[in-house]
Image 1: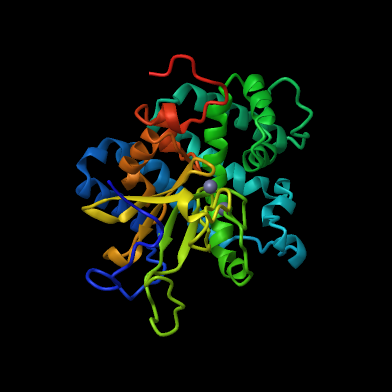
Image 2: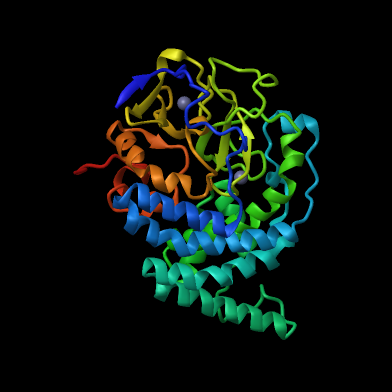
Length: 359
Ligand SMILES: [Zn+2]
Ligand SMILES: [Zn+2]
């Protein structure tokens, strides 16, 4: 591992591509190809990639559908935007229960089969079936006290806002672990929001958003990229490098962010920010902040051939998560594979109380 501050010069040549500034491959096919490429490049990740392939592919299929039928949310007023109020903070998700339910129903079997959660997912499926039957009979879905039913818009907002209580209550009523319920709800919410974000992304991008969390859904970034140089004469280059973009861990929206600050705490102190990378893969970096003890992984797209599927990219960087973990750093976003991978679980699942016997 090499150390550097965030001034590592980019070469802007070599394997760099000039074709696609975002370096992004769209759709389920691009995603599946990207996952296969990760397995080829890092065979040790084969089992982990296989574990998540069905889920990520199904989510990509759903996101395409939802993008085609996405609503056009009102942009918030410029003052609230400047204050850092993300767009969905003001949106009532109950108006979007239908796509959320569709995604939930489609993903329950995938989650059950992929992660050995068949029993839990069957419970949720039965609850949903009762809910739909009740709705079909013209009854109110909220008044049938005999069968507990998941209020998906409410639970989705709990996931967005980081409120554990609604998930705990619903989990207890349904007989499913809150963390498992959260996994199912977040998994369903992701493609719904990804569809919206994809359809409306240019509208958000036109407004200057300066926060380190997603302007659309408020989630932290999963990964950062330094963009390729589309038009070297038109770019305002800093240290020979590309522009930094953050990629949302939930909806996949990407937004520009300053290079000289920590997205989590805004720290700009050069001495308390550090970049770590392996000599044989200098384009894949850990960007660490000692002010808030967090890190974000960053890929320099100028050093990468071909298009990337940003949904797949973090799965190919798990070795960097391990290194960051050894340095007692916390990820800005906890991704499902870092929760479910036992090797990563102890550190990436933030423990609120002191662990007396951490081995
Ligand atoms: Zn987002
Ligand atoms: Zn920080």
